[in-house]
Image (cartoon, rainbow, N blue to C red; front, side, top):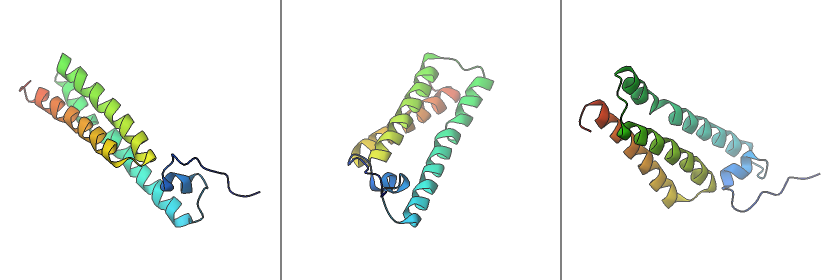
Length: 110
């Protein structure tokens, strides 16, 4: 048969992972990047949330921070896959702001 056609909205790395490219090394690199990104998405904010939970810090700002972090990181993965650098930076920054808000709430500043 041949290789399947990949839509043009997909980044080249994702296309290789889907079989749209010919370089197996690129596909392995993409899988590595994705694995590290997913690990980062799960592990960075989790200790802050667990600390807030342990200290019984349940405020509107902590709920907002967690929601902001979650949605920004979800958008980040989609935008990263699509290969849109400016939106990727904005989504990452939004997630970072969520972490800062949560840290400030833990330290009693908010």
